[in-house]
Length: 120
Image 1 (cartoon, rainbow, N blue to C red):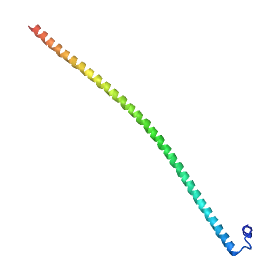
Image 2: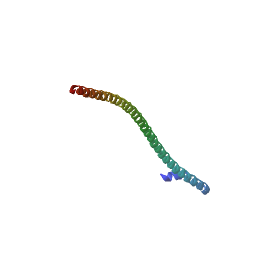
Image 3: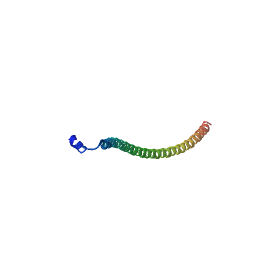
Image 4: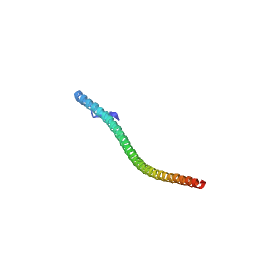
């Protein structure tokens, strides 16, 4: 088949044949260059898609961490309120214990006084 492709060149001057050869070489070179650039383009597009996926994953992770952080902050607030309530309850109970301790001491003194009176 290549002989049919070359048949049209028969009878052309050597100068024209040289120019045709140069043009064919240039076409081959440009085809190879185009293939290389196409491969580069495909590689860059693949890398871009990979980066887009990575960015999407990072955004999802950031959103998850933000929700988790919010949840932890709410939990901390809840624990702080519980701590304050328990602290207040403890103060109330300590106050009640002090009052009852005072009443007990007063009752003991009354009992001692009454015992002294009975002994007399």
